[in-house]
Amino acid sequence: MMAKLKCLNLDLHFKTFYKTNPVQIKYKNKFIQDSCQLKIETVKQLEQISFSGFVPQDKDQKVVCQISYNNIVLEDPTPFVFEMHNNLYVENKTINNYKEIHFNGKLNLNFDEKYFKHNLLNGANLWKHKGYINWEDKFNDSQIFCLGDSFTFGHGVAPEHSWPGLLQTYTKQQNCNFGSKGLSHDGCLMNTNYILDKSKKVQDVICLMPPPTRKLFLFDFLDMHGGITLSHSFDYKFPIEYTNAKKQCLEKILNKDYISEDWLNACTAIIKACDAKNVRCLISTWDKEMYTQIPAKNRLPIFPDLDIFPERASDNNHPHRKHYELFVQKILPYIDKK
Image (cartoon, rainbow, N blue to C red):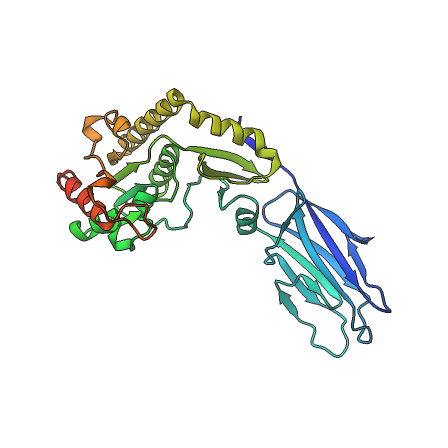
């Protein structure tokens, strides 16, 4: 069952300071003191709080605002936009990222997709209708799409030294490197379906499948859908409403029979989806056990063992340019068959 969160309760806290004149804080036509609860039901939602009682002669007046969820403070100031009103001797203007109030006016809390992605959802992708899993928004329509995880993205090497970058150099044909760090096998399937649905140019999908050690975690967040890859290597914190679903997803990864079959099902589904759109599908991996399960007509040479070269990427962990060059040299005859 998909994890769902239809309403999010955030706490807005106020620390008020003054010497002679107290400050009035008003939310939804009610005066409040130390805090109020914000009931968030849509990803793009505006909440407004008014402040009055600031006077020039009381220099100690200020209100410090802070948002928290489940007793965890969310430090990001970007939703805080303050409109100054009815202040004497100063220009009344709009101030962005304003969490420490010193003037009369209205605080606009402009919540949006970016805020929730980076403050509650660990950067997970959100979408309304059809989505994909990628840390970066880099869908560039091309005839060739290269899919996979950090081994495709090219973590720790220059973009032109990733295998999609080198493939583009050798073939002199532009491609889209749609690799995403930490992507799972079912994330590859989801991204393939997105490409086939959105692209007007795609002729080839080349997928370097990661091993079956991760699983796509899908969820509903307010009025949107979301997804992120889970692994026992990633300690992501999510809203408490997702706790059980996250636990079940991680348990599936530890079930070797389940996750291996899930990997094979994703591989098969990628091929079928491409066949249905008359798009050529070529697949490889560096997992030796799963490599033999790829159908021969779609199978590229296996990605080189890392031990074949002592060099590594800048993080001293991921493949070096030499690994990618060798891989491209091996797969070029299969690409050129077209």
